[in-house]
Length: 95
Image (cartoon, rainbow, N blue to C red):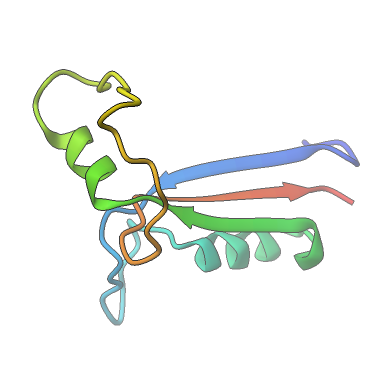
C-alpha cells in the first residue's frame, strides 16, 4: 500500500536492553526492526534503523508527574546513551 519512493516510519519503546531466549516478542531492537522490514520486502540498503535514549529520559517518563512530562532544557539531559536505549526506530524507503 506504499507507493514507490514512499517512506515507512516506525518507532517502538525499548526500555530494557535484554532479549530472553528462545522468545522475547515485545521489545524490538534497531536490528530486529531492520530484519523485519527486510522480511516485508524493503531493500536492506533503503532502511535506516537506530536506538536512542538514556536513564534520565526513562526516569522522567516514569516519575508520576503527569504524562507526557514537560521538557525542561535546564534539567532534562537528552544525550544518547547507547547502553540504555528507550526507543528503537526505523525508516524504510520503497524502491
